Image (tube, rainbow, N blue to C red; front, top):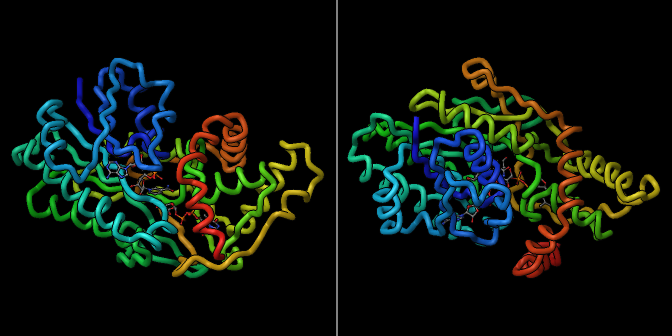
Length: 351
Ligand code: NAD
Ligand code: DAU
């Protein structure tokens, strides 16, 4: 069946993998990628599919009510997959307002645009909101986040995402809008902006720069290869139950310091360095304010109800990821130009 689908934030890291999967897998769908192209948005992420006839890019802001009304009028969307967001925790600590604006005001502006365009006639429509495990707070050494774990966001980023989740659920409860939400753990893979741990460490190892590890490096994250997340999003968009939430995770917990050591070993091999060379770059720096200790996801609901499972092992995923960054030097050069240097100095000089 033909469908018009609006994907927001499709020029970003995860969004670009979601757009690629939909454009290639569903040639009969018309995919509209709506993205403001902030520092994190990059059309180079999509050069392999941007000339396909079922793909259109529109530059714009999810806070722009008028532009969204025009877009919904023009394309008569069947569904929305909403990924656009400010996504970096460190930036939310120095500039919370941009997170409030995009993640909260932007999400409710998008919900309103859909509600008006769909005229409260919900048949055949779906609003899918992509969220994070960080809304559940922080765990000690035991336990997992479940879909019904009470929200306890602790950074401006996670508080803004939690707020957007609540608004999406409110539109379901109050107006009956058909919605679905997923909350995923840390993604890694090609095309991630090098402010996030993995691409930052890979790039710094390559350039023999200090590897900044916050605090004692004992914080734990659960890592999932980005294409496995994109496949989960495809499955949930098509088969998820109306009004439901699905957790997505990799079952793959690492302390930051162990992960950085693993990357050092892989990179020593790739760069023909004597084993142990890159690890000498590890530098413990001042901790992130309010740094959540541990995230861990229970995603049995997604596995048992929709049959999802991650397909890429961590070893395979790291191999693909490191190779991609080493082979895509132009991509890295282009994203490192512009404001990156200023951001990097601000973020790390004082630590
Ligand atoms: P990203 O920062 O790489 O990309 C965000 C995209 O949104 C960029 O292309 C940017 O230009 C666009 N954008 C920002 N503000 C916008 C606005 N006002 N209007 C239109 N577009 C705008 O983020 P990501 O890591 O790909 O994350 C995508 C989504 O997935 C986010 O909602 C994030 O909260 C969520 N998420 C991310 C992770 C992760 O590990 N990266 C894990 C779970 C959930
Ligand atoms: O859990 C899902 C979330 O994962 C997403 O919602 C966010 O959008 C995404 O950015 C990510 O958040 P984190 O804060 O976990 O990711 P980040 O890559 O910034 O940091 C991962 C861990 O590494 C975290 O414990 C902080 C630490 N870190 C990070 C950086 C950038 C360092 O030790 N040094 C660094 O330089």
